[in-house]
Amino acid sequence: MKEYLQEFRESYRYTPSDFEKLGGIWPLRVGQNKAKSNYIVGPRVIDCYSLHFIISGSLFLSHGNEYVKLTQNDIFCLHPHIKYSYSIVEDDPDTPLRMFWMAFNGTQASPMLKYIDVSEERPYLRNRMTPELLTWVKTLFQLIAEKENNAVIRLQVTLYNIFNMLTPLTVNSPEKAHANEWLKKSVDFINTHFTEGITVAEAVRVAGVHRSHFYNEFNRLLGMSPMQYLMKLRMERASGMLKNTRLSVTEISLSCGYLDLYSFSRAFYNYYGLSPSEYRAGVPVKVNPIDVRSTTKKRNKQNVIFL
Image 1 (cartoon, rainbow, N blue to C red):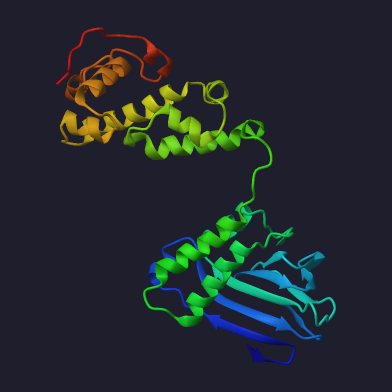
Image 2: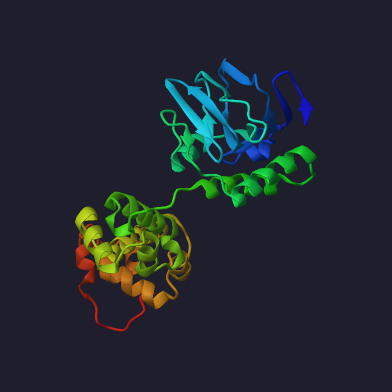
């Protein structure tokens, strides 16, 4: 580390490529230091985010209207355009103030910080440094310091792993969590993967709650069962493809998450009261597809493939 007036410091700047900026977050600077007795930074503002990891010692942080003492294994974040300053608490040769830091930006930067419970109002985490987290921080530092070629993906992986290490653990059981949280997670899962042959059991596992609780809350809050919701998405996708593409019925069935033409044709008929070919030909729908509860009724008992 190079000696400066108030510290010993080693730092490196990083210029993200256009490719990296297509992602959600990218590094801008990394550094490490050992503070001297007169160490003070600011007051000033920056135009990015900067996470600081306290390896030893302690400091006073002033960030916006917040003033707090932070010590070894604490982490704090500087937010863009918010005035901050920080200074050493006391100079102790046995436990000097030492830090690593990483500055970053990106469209996911603010949501990522909120995800790890860091905000403008409370820009720090208590006692969150671990040996594993420090290893990832040092890896990011080395990748940028050494300017290794073709390290873009490794940089991204390392950066996201640092945030992964900071993800808070849930202390309450999932079923006691607010229903909107796990329900949104499961609905997002279904919305994203409904064409991939997923099952309701997989959505239950994503939610992390008991199956009966999942079904009851899903019905109560969405007004339909998980299977009916999954069916609704698939049928709406299928009907759109039948009307707007020249794909065969078999190709559409496979594109909507069905393993074969028969299971798709039967499901389509149960939902609309028409075969896929009849629907494509413009035959009027025989049932009200909006009432997805009716899809559980058997409307056709014949083992016929509707071509």
